[in-house]
Structure formats: C-alpha cells, structure tokens
Length: 347
Image (cartoon, rainbow, N blue to C red):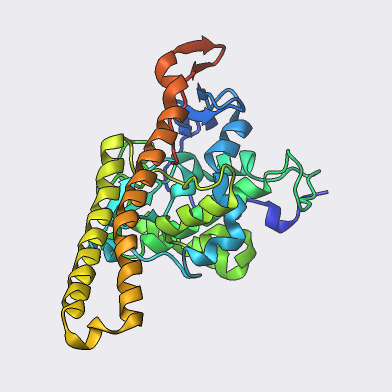
C-alpha cells in the first residue's frame, strides 16, 4: 500500500543541476556536530547514517517543547522579505541550527540558517524524507517515521519562499551565502529560484498542514523565547540561548541597568528631600512614612541587586568549574571525534 499524499515529498523542481554521476551523499555536508546523551559533543560523518543525521539536522531542539507558548514570542504571519530586515537595520547572522532559524535579539541580530544543498535535491528528499509504504504516520509517529523531519524541512523551505521574494532579496541571500551553489559551483539562477518559490507557495496553499506549525510564526523574539524557556524547562531560570560568553560581559550588562536604576532612585530621594524641606510636607505623616520606606529601599535595593549579580556569576563559575579544572580533552571513536567538554548554549 502506498503512503498517503501528505507522507510524500511534494517538490519536483530541480535547481542545483544534479548529474547522474553524483551520489546522494555528495549533497551532504562534510561533517556535522551533535550532542550525545551524556552531554558530550560529537562530530559525525553524515554519509554513514543519513537518517540519524537528518533527525539531528532538522531537529527543533527544545523549541518543539515550547510550541503552545510561542504566541508570546511572535505573531502568526509569514516571514518578512530579506530587504525589509536589512532596511530595519537587522544584522543577518548565519547559523546552522534549525531551532535558531528566524530568531532575532534586541541588538538587531537575525539568525538565519542557510538552505542545505540536499534539501534542493528532490531525489535525495524522496529517498530519505518520504515515508515508506508501511508507515502510517501515527500521532505521535513511530521512531522510524520521517513525518516530523519532512514537515520541518518543508516549513523551513517555505520560509525561504517568503524571505527571498524579490530580486533584491535574492541578491542579499547570495551575498550572505544563504543559498547553495549548483553542481558547477555557480550561484543559483533567479529564474530557477522563482519556479521553486512558486511551487512552495502552491504547496502551502494546497495543504497548509504539510509544514511544521513552528514556521507559521516566522520571526520569533529571542528575549521572549528565553523567558519561556526559563519557566518551562529544567533546570529553571536558564535562558534558551546565552547572550554572554564571559564574566566581563555578564557584569557589564547587569551593571548598566543597575546604574540607571540607581540614578533614578537618587532623583526620587532628592525630590523627597526637597519635599521634606517644605512646610506643607514637614508635618505630613503619610509622606514621612513613604520617605522612610523609600530611603530604606534605596539603601538595600542596589546592594541586594548587586549581590544577585555576584551570586549569578558564582553559580555559573561553580557549574563550569569541573570542565575548567579538567580541561578540554578529546578522543576518537569509529566514525566520529568526541570532545568531552560541552560548551554552554544557555545561561
């Protein structure tokens, strides 16, 4: 029995010009990085286990567990074209993590994952992302089901149909190396991309559920993703993506807002001091109590806030101390190289 239509790979357009002499594995990257169950970072050969590579390459990570809370991070709408992001002053930052695709931070950085070459190869996708005849795509699907990776791949490509909608977007994408080259190492042609983009739009209009629901909300605010992750994942209070990578930036970022708050408190205290010097407020018991309470807060508030910053730094120091004392070590296993030290991606 053939699989249902939604379990098939729907795209037919060939844009990279694959030749018969090329193998399916030629479209794969040289190596890929992933984390094992013990938290150790591993570097694997994608050609040795293509299904395992695709599960990791097309994984949404912890973002998949936050699906019902994503309304807080972004509205349900298509991705804005690239030229709009550039006009808004956003810096396009290349990332190879699918879960970071189209996340943006408050500093104007927009994370975009480039299109892998293998996703533009219909023959490869039909072989490796199309469900087999025996797969029923149950919910939740079986381990061997390719439904979730396929929906993620199609949703990811759909965002590119929205991102690269005009010729100016196409030139920005090529400048940032977001689109792969053809088999002759030449950039994609604009005419070929238009055909593929229109096919992606027809696919979505015909069957909206064919793409993963994560990509129905295109751009997501990273700061709000961090808030969701702090309160929905264990350990608590860990953001999704660390914005600081050293203790100097940790103190600098926190002391900046602490300094601003201290200046505001000083202005309020000055105003209260002036008020106490007036005859009308000298005998006002309510104002006296408010002044007393705010004075105590002005003394203890900054000290407590600074203490929390120091405790946060000590917490991360203690957490990183074992790896700092051990030092980076690596070992080689068949088909992979494993690094014992796992870098922090959230803090």
